[in-house]
Image 1 (cartoon, one colour):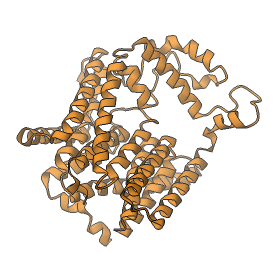
Image 2: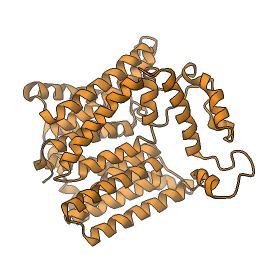
Image 3: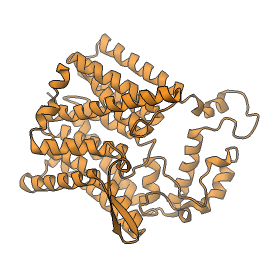
Image 4: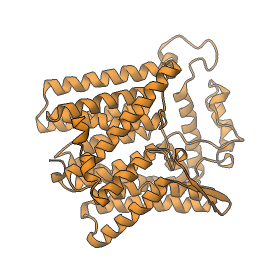
Length: 424
């Protein structure tokens, strides 16, 4: 109880700017379709305004006023310009596809306000700690509900109140933070809470992409520690043990999704599709997205919430010939929209070469800031590479926690890269 009472979160809630950023972050970690909303007619579609939208608008106004007064730190300007260009492409190309895609594009872009808010408002170590508090508390709450559902369902992956991929991606952030505390040899109880809560969330969400992100984050921490010449046995042992536990738990829940390994190293299939699994389906979707990109190489199809049949149906016959050993159910229907599975497929297919280059410039700018911050703490680079892993398993959608986490991590990485005093 004392640890909860002493959280930086409560002190930062007394500051209007910090309180607005923390509240907005908390609201955006709740799926938009789980929030109460007001339907507003817009052209030929309906836009639902939820509390998260209102908070994002208020945060945007506050940040714009702050930037107008103080400007942006020079080191953050290139990444900020790339983020602005990416968001503009999403909205403009969405608008060309109709009112529904326009609303969907705005819902994705508005979450970028979290990046702006973190960049502008997170200036001290205590403000960073308060943001971590929000992530930890949400992870603990998601763990509690996830464990209840796990028991009720008799096992299996759990979405809690987030969604499996969102849950695992969120839990990875406090877990990596806790591992950094272990290496730094401070705040033992806080480190233990973060590691336990994060590990439970990663296992229950059982997202292989987030497991990849966890490995990348742990490698980033290890590289920074080795480069600093501060590698010690106990923290390394704790990290390896944590990775082993999370990996074992995740793979146990996802044991049916490694059919491709059985196909490569096991007995030959007795029937077509015997070893088919979810990653086999993702490969099919990647192939189709690749064909869509080749059909619209410059600007893609334009942004869509879901890719309509007229943009991909003509590539289905080729996909079925290419993956003739896969079950019919693994192919998208030519009568229904295709749900993008990975951000790294979604961006080329819907924004083409131009959007892909802008997106990569954005990621490169953030990576540069994260590496610069690693001279003081590996937190920024660990979180950044972990979220890159996470978006390899889910596309960017408005109103989803993973998209909120993506933009929040970008903003925090830029904030950490702004000055080393932030993490000392």
